[in-house]
Amino acid sequence: MNQTSGYSYAVVGTGAVGGFYGACLQRAGAEVHFLLHRDFEQVKQQGLVVESALGNFVLPQVWAYSDVRHMPACDVVIVALKTTQNHLLPQLLPPIVKPDGVVLVLQNGLGVEAQVADLVGQTSVLGGLCFICANKVAPGHIRHLDYGQIKLGAYRADDRPAGISEPMQRIAQDFQAAGIPVELATDLLLARWQKLVWNIPYNGLSVVLNARTDELMAQPQTRSLVETIMAEVAAAAAACDRQITPDFIQTMLDYTLKMKPYRTSMKIDYDEGRSLEVETMFGNPLRTAQHRGVKLPRIEMLYQQLKFLAGRNLN
Image 1 (cartoon, rainbow, N blue to C red):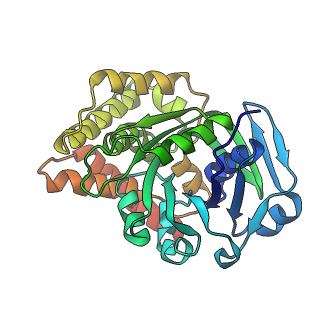
Image 2 (image 1 turned 60 degrees about the horizontal axis):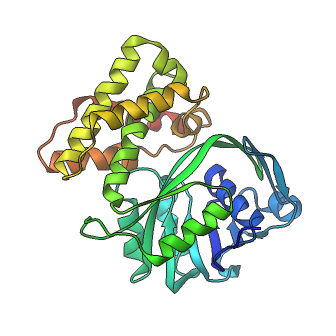
Image 3 (image 1 turned 30 degrees about the vertical axis):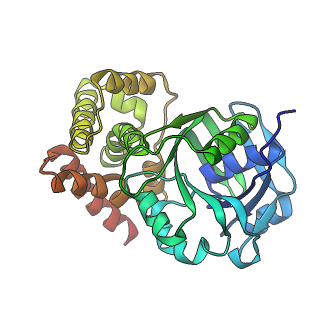
């Protein structure tokens, strides 16, 4: 059996992503504590059910909590909430973060680590970029469709490349023992912009055009629009001194062509009447580019359309 590092983990946000990764870590032998909201009673009584492309499994017993004050402080706190819930973090993080611990932010968008770093002081903050197709199909029941790899990078307030720390390596060891491929990134900001190359066009267009990823790729007009938006993301990254090559964009297009038909996370949130992660995924990159004098006309139009749709969706 693979050896885990001995780190204890807390999962804040036991949805599709937090639930899947947390369940895999526990199955591999790590100590994992899950903070839940609506699913608390179900998971407390029945545990977690994971249907996975890599093999189904059930964890009949998990450490489940509905109140952060009952949780132990852990070595690694995984933040897997939607960014629309980040206003809760000042109450959720301080009780469970060890002074010498790590907060691993598994969230979409730009600027998410800075928000967490402001709350946890000297605790080291890592960003994790998840390349995964998964959704929650019922309380405590997660369906993992495809992929699953994570790219980890350390956060620095000045956005300079931070290299690879020992905690990063230990966390990577635990995820790999759990069957999750991990890539360690020396430059978190570059990794964030690279993820936005995929997230901005596919999440945005899937909501605005009411389409799955395969439908967006099947039509020449929408595929061309995806490529144009990706080029705008690359221009914004270049304004932050981060280079995204045409080869990288082509790799993202090829990757999406091979994917199973997929309803993006933002499309699922929209269809289910939930808040959308418009600000971290669209607003923050847009403002960052504008601050540096770079205009992103198509991304700005997507942002304005999504703000309209998100507002109407919640009324």
